[in-house]
Length: 356
Ligand code: KG4
Ligand code: ZN
Image (cartoon, rainbow, N blue to C red; front, top):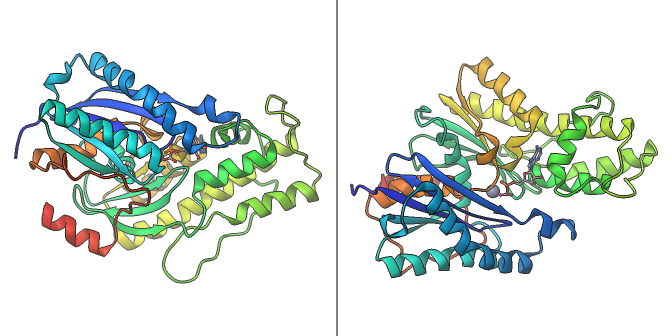
């Protein structure tokens, strides 16, 4: 084991340019996130080419800011952890090439990190003592999955979505209602003042392996809007009426109920000691309340990161990369971005066991 005093984390997989400095004990010294939400808001979704160009402009100042907030000089960094996938390829390449260039110039190692591993590991940022085996529910704009984590660095997929991610369901339905971009937080806020029992959404039925499915909510919301005469907002600044608030509350209730139903089944099957709920959608107020109740009921230790670590950030990437840097892994010459990188599965478990 090498001791690595400071790790620089870099994350550019989607629409946040992020850098962070974590010390050798995994303590976060700084976490800087430069969001592009305003840029993409005008288009109602992330435009990959614009996102990549913005990352290029932002990455150097963001890295400098992360070092200065951590009061760590760049030459004192002992290793770099960078997101290599999954994500938008042009965006990922900005991160991996910056990391590689810095590592070569400074003669320090670099490791590539799976973005989803980063989200899972974010459960340990504020709770470093969280016990294993853990179960992690990662809910973001692009992914929704449950992993069993028997030991640090080992991920066994329990279930994932067959179609849309939970965040995507929030974003797409919010767009149909004419709510401001990004839809998830806007819909969450509106749902707080609606009646979750006003409209009913059927339970999702899936045959075979445990899995999620969120693609049906778009059609269901469209039908309910039509049936109950709920028109989309004429502009995102308009005030939604009570029927729209009820629809938002009912939809949020249905999505969270699906997430919790599968998580409860996974707890029964996997018998973890702790539960992590992470990713952008973990900011959802109802999900946080329901996950807290479920963990209480099952007697599990729980970690839902604070809001700063739910959305994309580089502290989670640095923390995920730290043990591999400490083992002396160096991918300076070989690191590559991979848009469709996967995490977990039985083969992955065998491979990671060999690396433990
Ligand atoms: O993890 P993240 O920042 O980026 C990805 O890796 O995708 O997640 C972004 C997602 C978006 O779909 C956004 O609408 C959703 O997280 N989100 C929320 C809330 N805050 C963010 N969804 C529901 N309720 C929220 N409060
Ligand atoms: Zn993410």
